[in-house]
Image (cartoon, rainbow, N blue to C red; front, side, top):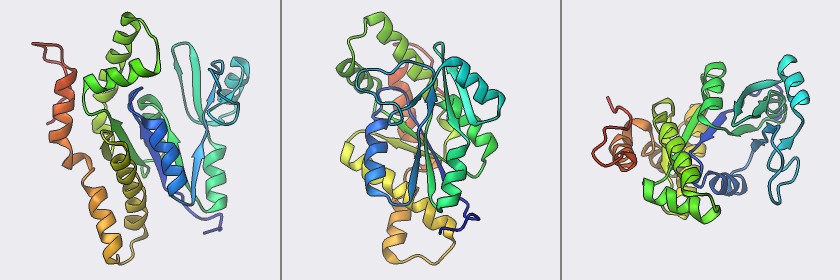
Amino acid sequence: MNSPAYTPVVYIISAPSGSGKSTLVNELLKKVSNLEFSISFTTRAPRGSEINGRQYYFISRPEFEKMIRDGDFLEYAEVFGNYYGTARRFLREAEQKGRDLLLDIDVQGAAQIQQKLPDSCSIFILPPDRKTLEERLRKRSEDSDEVMGRRLDTATREIENYERYNYILVNDQLEDSIKLLRAIVRGERLLRAGQPLSEEEAKNVAIAERCRLENMRGRIKRILDSFKPPGGSGGGSLT
């Protein structure tokens, strides 16, 4: 496992804001071994109790743009006037340590990673419905109705990218969601190892398979329908 020749499984986790992704990622890192977490770089200012090197690496715009020119990013994007990016060095470090790599990135960054690393495992976390998402967003902020409306519109557009992902996890009950996310990560490792599975391992893979995109289409349709305006025709195609 410590050989530099180790090829990490790269896990991409995306979700609309308010879906509980950060909580799930933090719990996953506690419960699954040999998993490196890639901390993103950003040009935005720290918020609240955020600490440089923990939630993000906070750098200046000129520093970020130099990293772009130097080819230091696996992916990067400008969102609401600030840059966000994943440094290439985290993948090299995971290879050297013989560990897998977890990326917490938005749908824009995920598309870049999937193009560069087509063998990556992508997981999209969804709220159970629009009402739940709005309640979660309101609990964590004091945004005006106008800002809240924009956040929900952005969430709707992000959710319509679900087709790009291998797995869909609906974060309804936190403890169940943690177990499902852990099963997906472990299941991918087991499938890629190509070894005969024990009874327990086969059960883990079966749990993960329930979250495969093709097995979640009915649930996704109901979630998308909850984001449609009354009498509207929004939402993504399920064909």
